[in-house]
Amino acid sequence: MRKSIIITLAVSLAVGIVSFSSWRLYLNHLRAEMEVRLSEAVLSIERGTYKLALVDAGEALALAERLRDSDTAKEIDTRIKYVEAVIRGNDLLDNGMYQAARDVFKLASDYVTDISDISSGYVEKALETTKGFIDFYALTERAEMYAGQLKYDAAITLYEEAKAIAVTLTFSEGIELVAAGLEEIAERIAAEKHAEATEFLKQGNRYFLYEQYEEAIEQYESALEIFMELDDSQGIFSASTSLALSERFLADKLLLEELAKQGEEVIGDSQDEPPPTQNEIESNHEHNLRINFNMSTLIDNQNRRPANQVRMGRTEGRNEGWYNGCGWVAAYNALLLLDDPQHPAEIVNFFETNGGTVLGGVFGTYPSAIIDYFSHLNYDTSHILFPQLTANLDNEIKKSRVAVLAYLHTSAAHYVTVEYRQDIDMFIVYNDRFARTRSERLGFSRLTGTGAAIDSVVVWLNETPEILFSFSLITVS
View: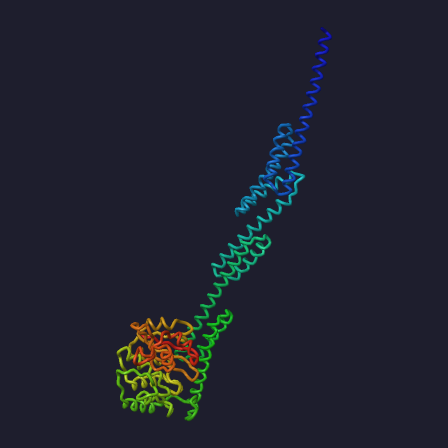
């Protein structure tokens, strides 16, 4: 009996020893597995594969809890929280929620300080990146605000700062955003400068119209400077052409004023012609009244009778219609088309008595004189200087009852009357050899008796080599 008890105790002890050894082996196995999982988690963190690290750390935590290793479990839990914060921060960053991402990465930074075997480099870089995005959008928002307030220099400076950040971040969308903002500012500045230059040009035209050439030159020079800065070829041509014409007219005006001061009677050179005297005006009027006109017939060639007999101005031999009559002929034809015929004697007399002749009539008539004459007859007129550059002639003429167009060609300046015939969808130009040539070439010459039918005034002006540019369009509504 006693021997049996001893044997039983021995067996039990042996079994206990074996069980304890097995348990220790099992625990060692769990701990080894936990350390492997923990090592894998750390390695995944170093590689930046945070979701995989989260799986490994979760398994390691479960093993630590089974081992009832509270210190290790706490350390692993800190790693998990760190990894979760990084994952969450990355998601927020990818979705453009930069403020929230910054807060989460700050939390991750707090966790990483308690973990000895994980570098804080990634979180620090993430915080720097997040700050970069926050600063970028703050700068672009301020830039947009300043641009809206027309503070372009400040806006450009902020955009450039934002661009530098975007380049550092390799943020291509940000670079494109800045480029678009800068381009919009450049377009706004160019548009404002163009509007300013155009206003200078318009003001110059107003001065030119009223023969205030010095003021016109100043405005044209300001316009030209801006157009050159903008590299606007059309604006440059318009301003420079206007400037050249104003300088020429100013020189003629100053010459006449000097001659008037000296009280000299100058004969010969056309550029030295003073205005017609009162006696010459009266003589011309009497002469012109004696000329018989068929007041229902349009004048289509000023070189023929009776138009070539009409006198205007003071220079003998060059004061007759064949030489300087295109201005009064244009007014005469326009009034005839308006069913309001006026004798050429009265038209010429108005031009002469109201200072409407250029250099005593040698260079014909000022555009302002024709406008004043239509106004004198109570017609509403509109005037565009250099219309070929600033307006669509075809549309402007189509909207009017009749128009008077002036252009400069290789020999001199010339006025024509233009009407739009809706029934044939053609423009009829009166008293112009260039228009007749084009009409014949296009086969339109037989569409009307008097005048030349053309398809487009703009095309006609641009495709006639002898015509340099149009400088005046007077429309009557």
